[in-house]
Length: 382
Image (tube, rainbow, N blue to C red):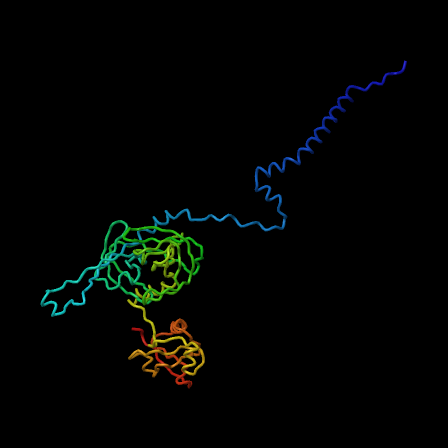
């Protein structure tokens, strides 16, 4: 009989274990490819990172639109923002006329009330506002958000920049607002306006900076370097602060475009800062001036006066002004001042900003098409 081939039991056990291990390995290999896609599907961030090459630039972090701490900031700055109430007498054309007094007696002047906004800029009681808010006011009262009311006096005002400084007398130190840096303000940045529109005390509106450096003329007043914002600025907001989200003053609310919606304007605080300091220290802004009415030279004027199409032409000379004393006359054409070309009013003002009252400047002038040099001593603008 042939011998039966028998395999020891322990060898069978080892073979079974090896077979089971191989089966497990194959199962893991087939299922591992499905694990990563499933994880990426559950988490898009994993899928996005998996698809990026090592040298790819990472996208910018998500932008959070809209400040979340406006309420806290408003609560902090509100004690420094005031309501400005003004009373002024409006006299009729016949006030004091002996003829009308004979028939109608004394005509009492009408009393006009107006409101605006201001904000504290020093602990000892100085308050900034717009000049047009307090213009010709007989009595000025300042209302604080705690309900207190104080009488204010005018320290100084400047029509040209539409700025004024008031002073209240109080035993307690006031909380001044921090003046920011409007040059760092960016278009699209959030800003907050606080004021008293239509007599509604401490109204808060928010918006973004729409543009910077806007010029605007309202009646006879020419504003420059205005901040444009879509934060609602209505009558009564004038003189109030335009704040960034840190609570810093970046502008002074001053005007609204009545023919458009969502367009307000504020004087940049960097423009106003030196003016406010000078109003506090001197009570007025001292500016040098020449004393002429001018018009930019265009081609028609150049042809008429037989000069080149450049410079400014003197339309009129103010009596007693530096221009009259220096001998300037109507139709003189000024092409440069101290070797700096001047072609319009703004360029003239920029040149004068670099000088003080009493400085002598040299003008290159054409009179009847003939060049001449005129020396002029600057005087204080009345």
